[in-house]
Image (cartoon, rainbow, N blue to C red; front, side, top):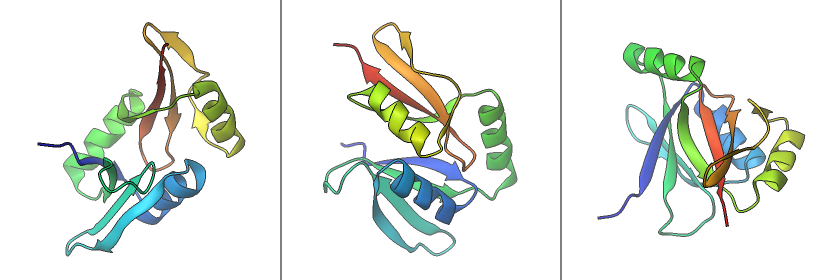
Length: 129
C-alpha cells in the first residue's frame, strides 16, 4: 500500500492552482474533468511516484463549515516539509504569502503557518538535524 493523494478543499481551483504552482513552486500533475468535479493535483516535483496534493472544490455546506472552523482556529489542512525553512519563509514572504508568524522551534522541528489564499492554513516545517 502507498499514500498517493492528500485532499484539501479549496474555494477556487484556478486560484489554488496558481498559488501552489506560481507562488509555492509545485508543479501541476493532473488536470482533467472528473465528472462532477475537476480532478486537479499538484506535487513538489514531476516524479511519477510522488504524493500529490488534490485541490478539491469546496462547495458542500458541511465541508464549507468544517473548513471555516478549522481555518478560524488555525488548524492546518496540510504540512509541507522543507530543508531550509528560513530561506523558504523569506522566498514565500517575498512572493506575498501571508504567514501567521515567523518560523518557531517546536522540539524536533521548526515550523511556521501560512494562509494558502484558498481557505486553508498550511504548516511548513523543517526537521532538526
